[in-house]
Image 1 (cartoon, rainbow, N blue to C red):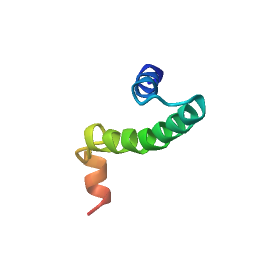
Image 2 (image 1 turned 135 degrees about the vertical axis):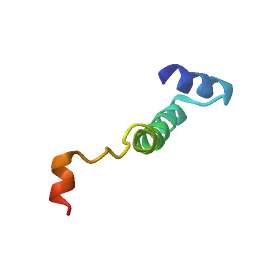
Image 3 (image 1 turned 120 degrees about the vertical axis):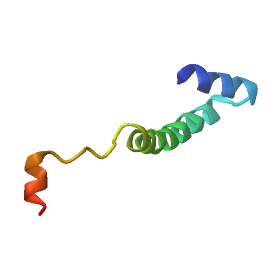
Length: 57
């Protein structure tokens, strides 16, 4: 991630003061995005087992 931030900072001609803001912005936007991707891709509902089927009847 640091490599990507450095690339953007150099491409956009940012000063070190703006670099800090770019790091904070990436951290604040990346965390919720990773959370949503985890829920969508990996947190699939499980099939109910026999014990759960009896409990929910």
